[in-house]
Length: 437
Image (cartoon, rainbow, N blue to C red; front, side, top):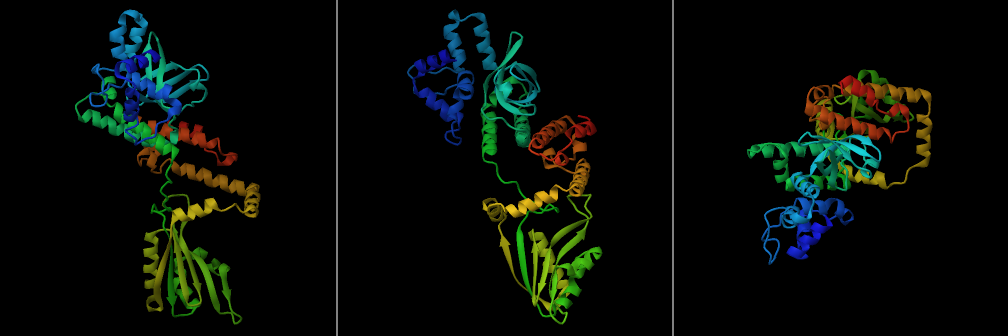
């Protein structure tokens, strides 16, 4: 490669490198990563790039082939047969996305091409020490003489948690190639070099600057913290009698646990949860807390976590209290602001100590473990966004679904490494067995 780079600079001048960098990184849309030029950019420049007339001002004229092929054509006599075969093979092999299927540390990697479904075992000493099964790399594999090596690899690995986005982009690209009348093969993937690089560089941006996940409540509604204020022209007790049906019957006796009365025993204030039976997100739960209702003197407030619930509770108050209630205002709190406040606030060491003490109790651990087991049992029949909104059982029936399942389970395995409590870890082995993977 150094010889070919020198040849290109001699033929076309020093501007060729600058122009190639501009094109590789989409003319400033992505920031160049100079730390990995020799392993990523330079192999693309040598074996992929074909300079265009309007890009390079060269007195020598431009070839319509890759720089390596032009170098081969002009230097064939001094290259042996293996070097010639290597250049031709490298130029015919496009960059693609490869899933790591096996790792022999310090020796080799098992790879599966996510676009062409090819299988390789590549000799690789350094990368095999850091890559893990389940990772995806953007690379070129050159098979020659019964062996295969990687000639160029993107510096950032695509971990399992970002692979659903990669699969979506890959599937869109496959449709695009077929829609223009081409077959899925080395040539068509090579022609899609620009789209492939764009997918990869977008994934790097996503992994480097992950967006906050869209937060939804257990009904699937976007979270929006809302506090609604009302005024009532009846006593707190009369208001409670009209509204206590918003708590399920079995919890109504507990309403007065958070209440206050005056010296004569008259109710002054009370707070209780607004509940409904069942839970859309967690089938094993008996109920869902929809919000918190507070009556204090002639004031009535409701705190909910979505616009839909805010609209619902306002309608319920009007229906249950009639002319005795008057809506005043609603106050919204940004979830982004709330999360930022939590992240910037120093942890309450006393509270953390209390939580650690509570979680260390055997009876609490047993209860949590029971809930975790119930959650994962329900997971098999729950629609999962990363599985294209199919359930894991449905996904396991198709090749495409199993590919997404594999990425999801690899992500669970990685997350297990960060969890010290055994009872909070996911039994991925049992999942594989149940799903037939």
